[in-house]
Image 1 (cartoon, rainbow, N blue to C red):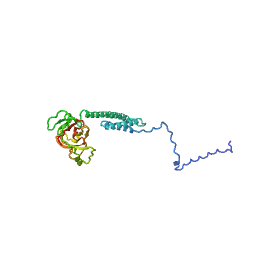
Image 2: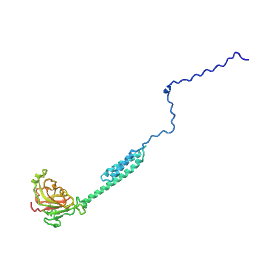
Image 3: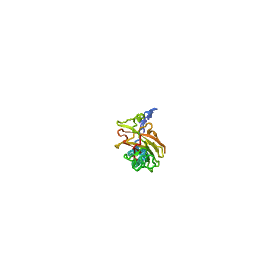
Image 4: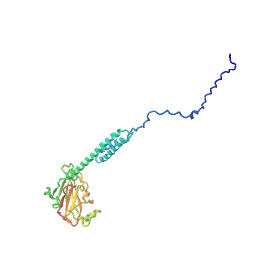
Amino acid sequence: MSNPTSFPPPEAPPTPPAPVTPVGSTLNSPPPPYPPLTGAPASRPTSRTNGLGIASIALGGVALVLALIPILNVLGALAALVGVVLGVIGLLQRGKPKLTAIIGVPVSVVSLALSVLLVVLYAVAFTGWVDTVEDDGASYLITEEEPVVFEPDSSEPADAGLGLSPDNPAPFGSTVHFRSAPDDFLGYGWDVTLGSPTLDATAEVAAGYPYSDLEPGEQYASVPVTVTNMGSLRATPAVQLKFEYVTSGLQVVEKRWINMEGTIETLGGVDPEASETGNVVIDIPTADGDRGVWGVRFYMNSQTVYFGAPTGN
């Protein structure tokens, strides 16, 4: 039998509607979080070039070229030394490729060693050349054969020793033959004849040479000199021939450069086999007068030939 007082079960409440998201609200929402990082951190990128290594190669190469050139090989040695230093620094740099530095260091070391070696060899060779010039007569510039003296109007060499010392001068008017060394292919040489001197040419020189600077007790003397170029090239007698005056007390007075009309300085170059005449002017002690002798030599190392016993003024 049914129970008239029972009630039906209550209905379930309605489901509330989903909230509506306003348009554009996503613009203000925070961004989703990044996923956590996993694995090792990324390494810093390395440089693909080593500037110091490249500089080391360049300096080593330049030094290698300069090493072969005299005098400049000193600069080559300095460049190579800098190249070695830069190459070593390039090897020690972190994060830099080593190849260029590895090449630059040995190149610079070789260049440095070669430069130093050639500097020494060139210096030794130059010293040997100077010694040869001074001792062996290998250079035509300053070495000669023994001079040969001919007395005035003679075609035969004078007696041995004539003119080779102030005590045994050749007479004025004699000719001396100067020749370069036998192995000199250029064949430099001069025939030189000294005439009778003018012992007091002070007034003449003062009139033509405004730079006269005679000391007290001095006077200008001049002697005419005839030169013949016996070489194969045009040459200047005032440069290749050296003149002097030797006092009775054996004091040597070397000729000064007096460039006035008529002097040997004005002759300039003389062609092969040509002859020219000019005066040699020297300031001599007045007290010595005609007691001294005149000397001439070919360049620096030849035997000086002395002239004296004037035949007349």
